[in-house]
Every structure is written in structure tokens, then in C-alpha cells.
Image (cartoon, rainbow, N blue to C red; front, top):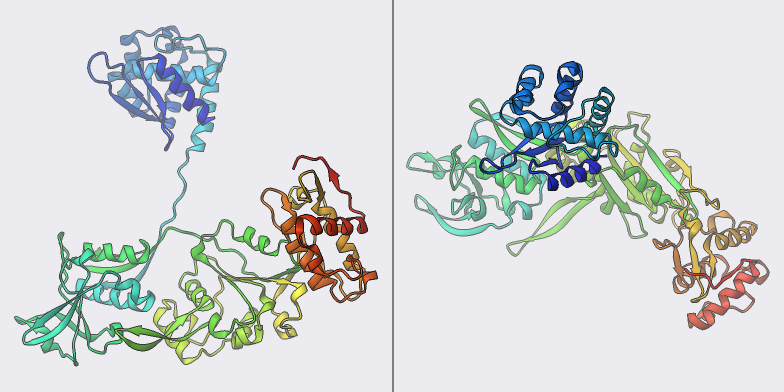
Length: 599
């Protein structure tokens, strides 16, 4: 609808000196005068204003109906007397004809092609049915221009403090919440002096010019040492940046415009580091640090579920559908594997080189990161996704954390000293650590599991019972959600077979073999294809290799789809031997090949 009006007004504006166009945002129509008395001027009226104006005409149709041909004085007086919308009323007085022409165009548009021959600059068709239809269509259009709701949530992190203290405490907050490398990006060093003491001054020229942000000394400094001209230059609290025990933050802040150490420049620095989510605001004579979040992840019933099934059934796709409208800030996604351990999941102390010295600091991993985010933001839903959960040793990876998976209990787990120390620094909501670890109520956990891999690291019953389970079956039906039904496997330029026929028939063989069963079946998306065409090379290297190596390798030939004595090497080169071997399998499985088809 809106594109029709957009094109219609543009076309009419070519024919008419009085221009009208539909705004691309906000539901406004912009129109112009003819420019015959000087320069062309443009004006805008909202769709609701135009609807109200047409409604005024409709309500007073007896007064308007005898004035369908444009006479400036008459339409100026009518508008002045009957238009209840303030903007339209003023426009009728000073831009009478542009408004008349625009109203006439709207009536023609809403009722075309019946009124296509009307000269909208000279005539307006005022019939009750036509005006009502115009109002109806404009009303429908106005609904489409409703502005998207943007919810800006603000949370106070540090409350009302004096300027120098709020900036100092904000910088300490940054040190606990962000990587030091991010905070000090672009940092420069210069030799500095306070009284008779030489020290290293560090500054960020992009934000604060050459003014020192902090100083690093060779030994401990006290309050009096950090003064000059009887003015305190640095706070006497060590900020321990670069793991230096004698580092001190500047006090020289002002709330004025300009270069150097000003609140405005510090807020620019904050916005860059925090992706525009942190800001210091003034409240009377004091200042607060706020967290702004214009992203939302609506709260929903918290789930803890494992999607399981044969390889390629769409388990990961199921999770993706759940998260398709969720911003990446609200989830962590990881994949378990045999080398994945507790430190990879929770975090650990790791070495870091600073100025040639090796220091150790706690580096949080996926579980801890999402744990902190969720506890600090209980108004949004967060998610942890674990792919291939049974490929890792769950008992070793989760450790004591697995007890927290029992959501129906009030069970808590004691954190290790290093984790506890980290959480005390970064958690704004101390409920996440005050009585030990406890999963936040707004954290859902989803996992996927290939049943064919269940022998890697078996899960014990205590772990299993803490999850909900959902089986993802193989689908052989021609339904809209089953894209694989249209997949075709290309044997050569003129021959192909249907992928759905192949997996259906080969799975029938697998299911009836007591040594194999459903766990070894091939799912719909074992091979994915955006074009719905699978090349022979991909088919042999993925599907045939899996069937030969993981399914039928140790089976008697009578229970296998492969002829006795067949090895995987017999499929190479693919274009010759591979093609012939695949045709043998298709014949054994009674799968039709289709010739001379355009793929």
C-alpha cells in the first residue's frame, strides 16, 4: 500500500508544479508550492493530520461539496473555518493550493482508477463514499508507520558522587569488567615529575590530550607525596594497573567543555569501551554511572533441555530457531569435545605478559561470562548453548556445577577462591555469590546430542535426570519445514537421485540391524545444501564415508549396503569408480535414478 502511494505521488509530482511525496519514515507527506512567486518551498503534514482534515470535510460536506473546483479565496475561508487540525488550519491560510492539491491527490489515489482523469491541481471530488474510502486507506497506512518501540533501560551502577570520585570509581569498575588491553588501547607514556619525584605518566591522547590519566611510581606514595602547590594531583589508592603496586589515578577532572581531563571527554572514552552502554550523568551537583541497554531479550519460562537424535536431524537448527530473534549479547554458544575441561568451561588463572614480566590473572570462560550477565540483568533472558554435549566428559567439565542443574532445589555450590574473587568484582547483583553459586532464574541452557556418539563419554543418571529431553526424529514427509525433501544428488550431468529416497531406504536397513539401530541412521541434514543439489563428490566424502566407516565397516556383507570385499578406496577416482559404486548401492537399495533431468 505505502509503495503504491509513494509511486503515485512521485508520478503526479512530475505532472504538477505542486509537489507531493510520501516520506520514507514517520508517516508524513511532504508537498510544495509551485515556486511561481519565488523559490519552491516544502511543507509536511502527518498522515493523522490529513485524516483529520478529510474527516472535517466529510463532517461538513454540505459546506464543501459546492466548491469542488479550486478558487483560492473560497478554500482559504473553508479551511480556516472548518479544519480542526492546527497545522492544516494554518496551511489552508498561507499554502491554500498546495494543501488542496494534496488532498485531491489522496482521494484520486485511494479510489483509482475511477478518478484517473481528474486534474488534482484544479478539482477535488467530494463524494461521501470516496472520502470515507480515502480515510480508511490512509488509516491503514498510518498503522504501518507506527514507530518501532525502542526500550532504553537504565541501571545505576554507581550512585551520586562528586565528579572526581565518580570518575575514579568508574575507572576501577572498568578494570574489573573489561580487559586491560581494551581500557588502555592507544595509551602513551612520558616521563613526568611531581615535586622532586620522577615517575611514568600515562595518557590517552585521543581522549585527553597529553594530560596524565594515571602515574606509575617506583615505590609507594602517600597523600602528601601526591600533592603539588597544595593541590591533590592523584588519589592515594593504588589501582594496580599493569600489576604495578604503585600506580595512582589522577584527580584533575572538571565538568567543562574543552580538551583534557573533562567529563565530556571521559564519557566519550566510556562509550567507546562499552559500546555506548556506560555513561556518567549529572544529578544536581552529584554524578552517577549508569548502564544503558537498548537491546532486549524478553523473559520467558526458563528451560534446561537436551535435543537428541541421529546425526543430521536438525538439532542445532532447533536451537537456532529458538534464538533467531535473540541478540548475540544474550547468549554464549560452545561445543564440547574430548579435550574440553572445567577450566575451558568456567575459567582459570592464565599467564599474561606485561612489560616483559609474567603475571597470572583469572580469565573467565563461557559459563562464567553468561552467569555474570544473567545475574546482573534479571530483566532479560539469557541462554547457554552446548553443542555436542556428549562429546565431552560432562562430569569433569561441569564438576560441582552440575548440582546447580537441579533448578527445583535451593542448592548452592561453593566457588573456588579464584572464581569467588572474580565474581565479587564483576557481579553487581551479589545474589550470584553471597551464599555460593546458584544458577540465575533467567538463564536457559540448551544442548544437542548425537545419539551415534553416545559411547564417547557416557552420562550418568544423576546428570541426565536434571535435564528435559526432546527427541528430534527423521522426517520423510513432503511438508514445508522439510527442505531436504527437495534435495537431489547429482551422479553426473544427466543423472540424479532423490536424497530423501536414499536416507529412507538406507535407514530402513540400519534400523533392522540389531547391532546398529536408530542411533546410526542418517538425518535429513546430514548433508546441507542451500541450492538443494548435492554433488557426487560431497555425497561420497560425507554420506558414503560415514556409512562405510561408522556404520557397516564391521558388519557382514549380508547386513551391509556394500558388496563383499568393498573398501572405501574403491570409490576413487570419484567420477569413474565412485559413480559406478554408488549406482551399485542404489540398485541394492532399490532407489530410482532419474535421467536427463535439469538440476
